[in-house]
Length: 208
Image 1 (cartoon, rainbow, N blue to C red):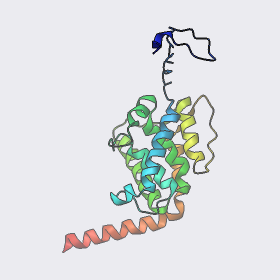
Image 2: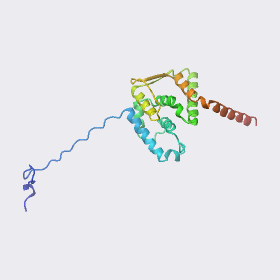
Image 3: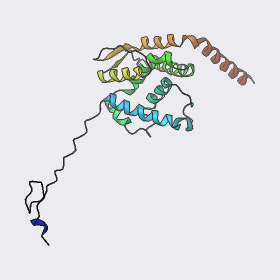
Protein backbone atom coordinates (compact mmCIF):
# COMPACT_ATOMS: atom_id res chain seq x y z
CA UNK A 1 0.00 0.00 0.00
CA UNK A 2 1.20 3.50 -0.77
CA UNK A 3 1.18 5.92 2.18
CA UNK A 4 -1.47 8.57 1.82
CA UNK A 5 1.01 11.38 2.20
CA UNK A 6 2.85 10.13 -0.94
CA UNK A 7 -0.23 10.29 -3.10
CA UNK A 8 -0.87 13.34 -5.28
CA UNK A 9 -4.12 14.38 -6.92
CA UNK A 10 -4.47 13.64 -10.60
CA UNK A 11 -5.20 16.66 -12.71
CA UNK A 12 -4.36 19.11 -9.92
CA UNK A 13 -1.31 21.10 -8.98
CA UNK A 14 -0.99 19.39 -5.64
CA UNK A 15 2.18 17.39 -5.08
CA UNK A 16 2.42 14.24 -2.96
CA UNK A 17 2.46 15.10 0.72
CA UNK A 18 0.70 18.46 0.33
CA UNK A 19 -2.37 19.07 2.48
CA UNK A 20 -5.39 20.91 1.10
CA UNK A 21 -6.27 24.05 3.00
CA UNK A 22 -9.96 24.83 3.37
CA UNK A 23 -10.36 28.59 3.54
CA UNK A 24 -13.18 29.64 5.84
CA UNK A 25 -14.77 32.95 4.87
CA UNK A 26 -15.72 34.96 7.91
CA UNK A 27 -19.37 35.96 8.02
CA UNK A 28 -19.90 39.62 7.26
CA UNK A 29 -21.30 41.54 10.23
CA UNK A 30 -25.02 42.26 9.87
CA UNK A 31 -25.72 45.92 9.21
CA UNK A 32 -27.99 47.61 11.75
CA UNK A 33 -31.58 47.97 10.57
CA UNK A 34 -33.12 51.36 9.95
CA UNK A 35 -36.35 52.43 11.66
CA UNK A 36 -38.25 51.70 8.45
CA UNK A 37 -36.79 48.18 8.21
CA UNK A 38 -37.65 47.52 11.86
CA UNK A 39 -41.22 48.72 11.25
CA UNK A 40 -41.56 46.59 8.10
CA UNK A 41 -40.40 43.51 9.99
CA UNK A 42 -42.78 44.27 12.86
CA UNK A 43 -45.83 44.87 10.65
CA UNK A 44 -45.07 41.81 8.50
CA UNK A 45 -44.80 39.57 11.57
CA UNK A 46 -48.04 40.88 13.06
CA UNK A 47 -49.84 40.52 9.72
CA UNK A 48 -48.71 36.90 9.45
CA UNK A 49 -50.08 36.20 12.94
CA UNK A 50 -53.31 37.96 11.98
CA UNK A 51 -53.73 35.86 8.83
CA UNK A 52 -53.39 32.73 10.98
CA UNK A 53 -56.18 33.96 13.26
CA UNK A 54 -54.03 34.74 16.29
CA UNK A 55 -55.55 38.10 17.25
CA UNK A 56 -59.09 36.92 16.49
CA UNK A 57 -58.69 33.82 18.65
CA UNK A 58 -57.23 35.95 21.44
CA UNK A 59 -60.34 38.15 21.29
CA UNK A 60 -58.33 41.24 20.31
CA UNK A 61 -59.71 41.83 16.80
CA UNK A 62 -62.67 40.88 14.59
CA UNK A 63 -61.96 38.25 11.97
CA UNK A 64 -62.63 40.61 9.05
CA UNK A 65 -60.66 43.63 10.28
CA UNK A 66 -59.57 46.09 7.60
CA UNK A 67 -55.91 46.66 6.85
CA UNK A 68 -56.14 50.28 8.08
CA UNK A 69 -57.76 49.32 11.39
CA UNK A 70 -55.20 46.53 11.80
CA UNK A 71 -52.29 48.91 11.23
CA UNK A 72 -53.61 51.23 13.93
CA UNK A 73 -53.82 48.27 16.31
CA UNK A 74 -50.26 47.26 15.45
CA UNK A 75 -48.92 50.77 16.09
CA UNK A 76 -50.92 51.08 19.30
CA UNK A 77 -49.52 47.75 20.56
CA UNK A 78 -45.92 49.00 20.42
CA UNK A 79 -44.65 49.31 23.97
CA UNK A 80 -47.79 47.67 25.38
CA UNK A 81 -47.90 44.12 24.03
CA UNK A 82 -44.24 43.21 24.58
CA UNK A 83 -44.77 39.49 23.90
CA UNK A 84 -44.37 39.85 20.12
CA UNK A 85 -42.72 40.56 17.77
CA UNK A 86 -39.23 40.49 19.22
CA UNK A 87 -37.90 43.60 17.42
CA UNK A 88 -40.23 46.01 19.20
CA UNK A 89 -37.38 47.38 21.31
CA UNK A 90 -35.38 48.08 18.15
CA UNK A 91 -38.14 50.34 16.83
CA UNK A 92 -38.57 52.19 20.09
CA UNK A 93 -34.87 53.03 20.30
CA UNK A 94 -34.78 54.38 16.74
CA UNK A 95 -37.89 56.54 16.65
CA UNK A 96 -40.83 57.96 18.57
CA UNK A 97 -43.49 55.38 17.80
CA UNK A 98 -46.14 57.32 19.73
CA UNK A 99 -45.89 60.30 17.39
CA UNK A 100 -45.72 57.95 14.39
CA UNK A 101 -49.03 56.45 15.53
CA UNK A 102 -50.63 59.87 16.03
CA UNK A 103 -49.65 61.18 12.59
CA UNK A 104 -50.73 57.92 10.95
CA UNK A 105 -54.12 58.11 12.71
CA UNK A 106 -54.68 61.72 11.60
CA UNK A 107 -54.02 60.98 7.94
CA UNK A 108 -55.65 57.52 7.88
CA UNK A 109 -58.85 58.66 9.64
CA UNK A 110 -61.04 58.52 6.53
CA UNK A 111 -59.98 54.91 5.92
CA UNK A 112 -60.90 53.69 9.39
CA UNK A 113 -64.13 51.85 10.05
CA UNK A 114 -66.76 53.98 11.88
CA UNK A 115 -66.05 52.05 15.08
CA UNK A 116 -62.31 52.68 14.83
CA UNK A 117 -62.89 56.35 13.97
CA UNK A 118 -64.90 56.77 17.13
CA UNK A 119 -62.30 54.96 19.24
CA UNK A 120 -59.34 56.92 17.86
CA UNK A 121 -61.04 60.32 17.99
CA UNK A 122 -62.22 59.71 21.55
CA UNK A 123 -58.63 58.98 22.56
CA UNK A 124 -57.38 62.16 20.90
CA UNK A 125 -60.10 64.27 22.51
CA UNK A 126 -59.22 62.90 25.95
CA UNK A 127 -55.50 63.62 25.50
CA UNK A 128 -56.35 67.12 24.31
CA UNK A 129 -58.55 67.72 27.35
CA UNK A 130 -55.94 66.48 29.82
CA UNK A 131 -53.12 68.47 28.22
CA UNK A 132 -55.17 71.68 28.43
CA UNK A 133 -55.96 71.04 32.11
CA UNK A 134 -52.31 70.42 32.97
CA UNK A 135 -51.05 73.45 31.01
CA UNK A 136 -48.61 71.14 29.21
CA UNK A 137 -50.28 71.29 25.86
CA UNK A 138 -48.37 69.76 22.98
CA UNK A 139 -48.64 72.41 20.27
CA UNK A 140 -46.67 70.78 17.46
CA UNK A 141 -45.98 67.18 16.48
CA UNK A 142 -42.66 66.68 14.74
CA UNK A 143 -41.21 63.69 12.89
CA UNK A 144 -37.55 63.16 12.13
CA UNK A 145 -36.49 62.20 8.62
CA UNK A 146 -36.47 58.49 9.54
CA UNK A 147 -39.89 58.76 11.20
CA UNK A 148 -41.31 60.64 8.21
CA UNK A 149 -40.14 57.93 5.79
CA UNK A 150 -41.70 55.30 8.06
CA UNK A 151 -45.07 57.10 8.17
CA UNK A 152 -44.97 57.50 4.38
CA UNK A 153 -44.54 53.74 4.02
CA UNK A 154 -47.36 52.96 6.48
CA UNK A 155 -49.75 55.30 4.68
CA UNK A 156 -48.67 54.11 1.23
CA UNK A 157 -49.71 50.59 2.30
CA UNK A 158 -53.29 51.84 2.67
CA UNK A 159 -53.01 54.09 -0.41
CA UNK A 160 -53.07 57.39 1.44
CA UNK A 161 -50.68 60.07 0.13
CA UNK A 162 -48.38 61.76 2.60
CA UNK A 163 -46.41 64.58 1.04
CA UNK A 164 -43.85 65.66 3.59
CA UNK A 165 -40.32 67.06 3.24
CA UNK A 166 -37.64 64.38 3.40
CA UNK A 167 -35.87 66.22 6.22
CA UNK A 168 -38.88 65.83 8.51
CA UNK A 169 -42.54 66.65 9.20
CA UNK A 170 -44.15 69.22 11.45
CA UNK A 171 -47.84 70.02 12.03
CA UNK A 172 -49.76 71.51 14.91
CA UNK A 173 -51.78 69.17 17.08
CA UNK A 174 -54.80 71.45 16.56
CA UNK A 175 -54.52 71.02 12.79
CA UNK A 176 -54.23 67.23 13.09
CA UNK A 177 -57.24 67.08 15.41
CA UNK A 178 -59.27 69.23 13.02
CA UNK A 179 -58.30 66.86 10.19
CA UNK A 180 -59.60 63.92 12.22
CA UNK A 181 -62.83 65.64 13.25
CA UNK A 182 -63.52 66.55 9.63
CA UNK A 183 -62.97 62.97 8.51
CA UNK A 184 -65.30 61.66 11.20
CA UNK A 185 -67.99 64.33 10.75
CA UNK A 186 -70.19 61.91 8.78
CA UNK A 187 -70.69 59.77 11.88
CA UNK A 188 -70.56 62.54 14.50
CA UNK A 189 -74.33 62.82 14.86
CA UNK A 190 -74.65 59.07 15.34
CA UNK A 191 -71.93 59.05 18.01
CA UNK A 192 -73.53 61.96 19.85
CA UNK A 193 -76.89 60.18 19.81
CA UNK A 194 -75.30 56.98 21.13
CA UNK A 195 -73.60 58.95 23.91
CA UNK A 196 -76.87 60.67 24.82
CA UNK A 197 -78.62 57.28 24.99
CA UNK A 198 -75.95 55.95 27.35
CA UNK A 199 -76.22 59.04 29.58
CA UNK A 200 -80.03 58.81 29.65
CA UNK A 201 -79.85 55.15 30.68
CA UNK A 202 -77.38 56.04 33.43
CA UNK A 203 -79.71 58.74 34.78
CA UNK A 204 -82.62 56.29 34.82
CA UNK A 205 -80.54 53.75 36.73
CA UNK A 206 -79.48 56.37 39.29
CA UNK A 207 -83.07 57.53 39.81
CA UNK A 208 -84.20 53.94 40.17
